[in-house]
Length: 463
Image (cartoon, rainbow, N blue to C red; front, top):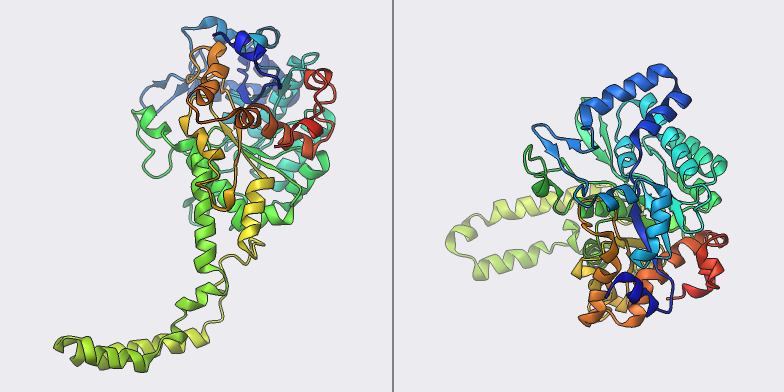
């Protein structure tokens, strides 16, 4: 069954929460020159020569990493030519698609401050110009660098305020160096180099959802100079989990309760684990429960009696030293003025707060062929009978989609296997992404084919 036939059997719209476009690099170079001048253009061209080959594949330390589906040239050019994407969308069985950058995502990691700013602005200008007249079905997503608060605010004003783009994407993992040149990863929430609250506030004011599309390449063991797959496995999940955990533990979600946060391309299994793990940690280490670990509560008299009754001779002989250590720990705990409440920044005061954050604020882009997408709706497994906000995210334009026409069919396989029921499929392919976008911006779908089909995002996205 082709996607058109499958789509004809589905009563609700299909929204692709994470398709990709591929930038036409020569036009990007021209736009960089337009915005930043000839010197910046030359710097940009030099950078391109060092990091990409002619086809746009990434140059590794020893070899090229093939990242684009070249054999299916029609698909390759479909995501490069906006009009062709628009015309072929029905072949995919998709009504409306968010199109995220491809090359543009690499620009967010540029260390050259001036080049990053100019290239980001050039790319956002390119997206707005290229998809003009097609945004009833295709919404290009603006790049927002988060290397500093000021840079983020300036680009939000330009991309959303001036260009009128309605969706944004950032990397939630910022590589930084500290005072002694050691590298560390800023995850925007807890222990961040900046207070990003002005950025979240501006996102709320502009009615856009902060979306994150970072990668974990180069972290820990993901540093092979030769093996792309080895580095790639789990890297998106690791990056999205890091920023999600940071935003929760840093209290961002509780300070901005109406804002939604979108984590892309890592699937949902990491979110299920984080959700359950947070609840488990809160139960055992909230501000009251953690007192059970306070050395001040250790009963030295009972300890002494138990050693006498059950300890072998060598332990009984060493009992005085053991008890001296216990007394020292008790004394230090009385002098310890530090907070041992690791949830004090989070704004979480009860388990239901964690449930509310995952239910109302967090959304997860899932590639169509991932069988673990079914975890999102397994509310007999997830604590508090929760369903996670998993969203159909095709990833068209990248190597893991060999044929665009079958991404909807890949998602439908979960229904055929009995892992999704029809209501869960509706949430996955429409309801959750519509809820995410329209609850922040009630007019998001006003001028789109979703509205013209008589489907209002605010009414029809009820889970």
